[in-house]
Image (cartoon, rainbow, N blue to C red):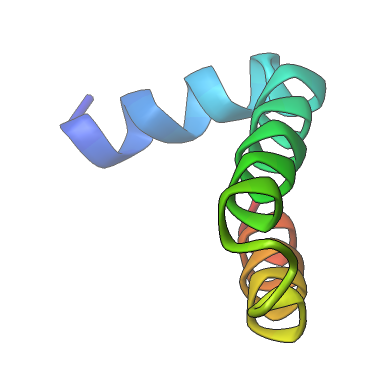
Length: 52
């Protein structure tokens, strides 16, 4: 099994926790930037969640 397959297995087993992490990072970025880049943060957040 190559590394990509191993990563896919880990992601599949922990999807909810990964999504919570993405949300936490997005909230932190919004807080630090005062929401100035909220649109871009939301776009990146949606992109990452779609990849899971």
